[in-house]
Image 1 (cartoon, rainbow, N blue to C red):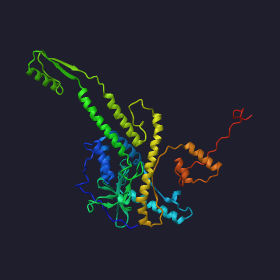
Image 2: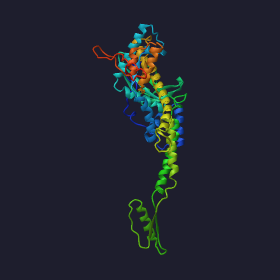
Image 3: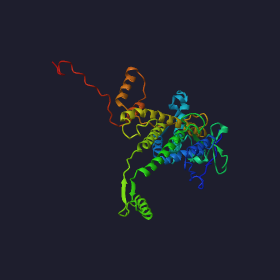
Image 4: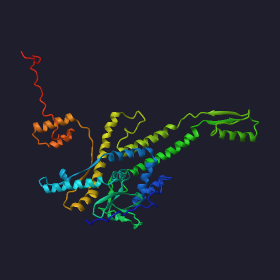
Amino acid sequence: MPRPPIGRVVRFDPNKDPYRSYVADGLTPSRAALLLKSADGGDLAALLELSAELQDRDAHLHSVAATRKAALTLLDWKITSAAEKEESGVDPDNTALRFLADRAADYCAKVLSEIEDFDDTLKHLAEATISGLAVAELVWGGTGRLIDVAEVEETRLLADYRKGKGVRILTQEEPTNGLAAERGKFIVHMPRAKSGYPSRGPLIRPATLLYLIKSYDLKAWAIFCEVFGMPVRVATYGANATAEEKTEALEMLRLLGTDAVGIFSEAMKLELVESSGRGVAPYEKLIDWCDRKLSILILGQHLTTDTTGGTGTYAAAAVQDNVRSDLMLADRKAEAATLRQQLLAPMVRWRFGSQAPVPYFERVIDEPLDRVLEGQVLQIATQQIGLPVKRAEVYERLGFTPPEEGDEVIERIEQPAPAMPGFGGFGP
């Protein structure tokens, strides 16, 4: 694998990068269809901009999308040596190879921890859980050491169907056709809810339909509230009222809608008819339905986001949360695979050579620990089965730290012998 160019290829453009085209302005079903078809034709920026804008405009979509992404990015990460993974194929008897694997893992962990904005880049890549695609550039120094991992704006991305599911990136040198997103220079993260080309699998596609339904329903609801949500102002006049008096009365009724004050002649009779409020329920129910579907689409369930009452209990929400855990497992696996293949592999290859085992990127999961159950399992494994267990792993699983020289330690605690039945624990 040839070494990639040193420094950044995608440089910040102050005249383009900070600005959006606001593709969601005046969004209609026909316009949304054109945007999705344009994305299918290779204009990925249209779909990615639509995803970002809809999350900005819809509070519920923003909330559930942020929950999905935060459940991944708020976890700590670690680099695990390939020597600790059975699936890596590292021979446990090959001491030299295991030592090399550990060195590679330590090197990657050190380099990535020194990159100041690496966690922000991971958040950028997590946007792909909703939009279907996110790209970052690997910035290499003159010594072949990784010095940065920089975000690539969505407005610079094109589909490269000449290379199957490839991606091209618009740069200042290639503003029309762009550069191919080659391995070793770019990270292309494409987790998809379904297989196919990059534009066909993201969650934002079905979310767009729900957004459109909500936006039309909100508009109709706002008009309804404006027309029927306030009292109807009625002025009656006698048969002898002149045209000027009628015009004056109409103007006063208009002013009552804003100023709430007005004067009428004695011949006029003013009446305020309160709205019955009928017709509100269908609008609200439709919006609630769309929000529930968005929650199911993004989180896999809706009970943890539905606070309207009467839709479930905490226990039911806890049961449904298992589905969401499955989605998060898929997100972690997709992220780990992308970063191992497109980030850690180039770092190891150019530092230690092609024979060095590539380490694994993993999220740290803080699972609740049942110490009593762990102790019982340990007792069965060691005393009944005779299974050899690493002492360091026992300390880690039970949450204890290994004692150091000079520490006061507690050895085996002897249990008192049970008292003889019938004697109350005393002698004869």
